[in-house]
Length: 261
Ligand code: 48F
Image 1 (cartoon, rainbow, N blue to C red):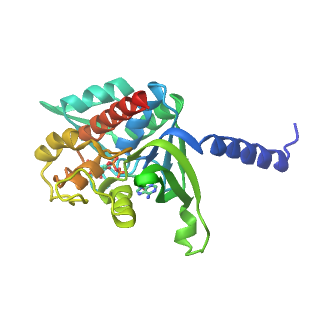
Image 2: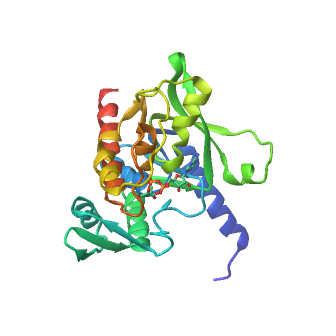
């Protein structure tokens, strides 16, 4: 068979556009394909919700592939290990209650499971705003190619609609910052704003993250490190159990919200 470059180009363009058009109206839009976002996506898709992730970078996994200071291993505690077992990611006990896993195996496996469960992940796309309606209800996201802002080009974005949004943007908690700054949203935190993360304390950070994984504004859930940053809890460094558990809890909250709509 003689290969035809035009057919290759058509296959890529047409199939991408089909997926992109389909992603313009979803049940749940997740911002960030880190460990929390991808875990949430897996459980949402498994639970029957139409789910999409937008990821700014070329690579998926957020802080996970880099492990701890570029030693590409992650550590999980007992509860986190159970989730990795469910994903079929291999772990090895280092010392009682501490398990380590290959950061790339964890990243690629969770990503693959999320996609095979039905999630669409769009990399290289940044969320730069939300879409709103009456009473500043969040009804979707405003997106643009990450390359546009990197190149400093003046290009208008596109928008998509979503019944629920999950901010899984990590330390930056970008969606929460956007709604506080642009629509004066009052988050369900003490001061109504992003509190800001505290310095590292793994034990406290991991024990508080599930409580911080909440609907922080109508239709917006925070997951992963964004949850701790929004509620002023410490960071935890390269222990990842809390990220996976937070992603799972965010999915459960989103499914609950969807069931009431
Ligand atoms: O940072 P990230 O991995 O967040 P996470 O899932 O996990 C945190 C851990 O990696 C680590 C930690 C662990 O113990 O503290 O930091 O909470 O993934 C966040 C992803 O969101 C993307 C970003 O590129 C990263 O891959 N992201 C951030 N802002 C945007 C975005 C945006 N505005 N639009 C699209 N993607």
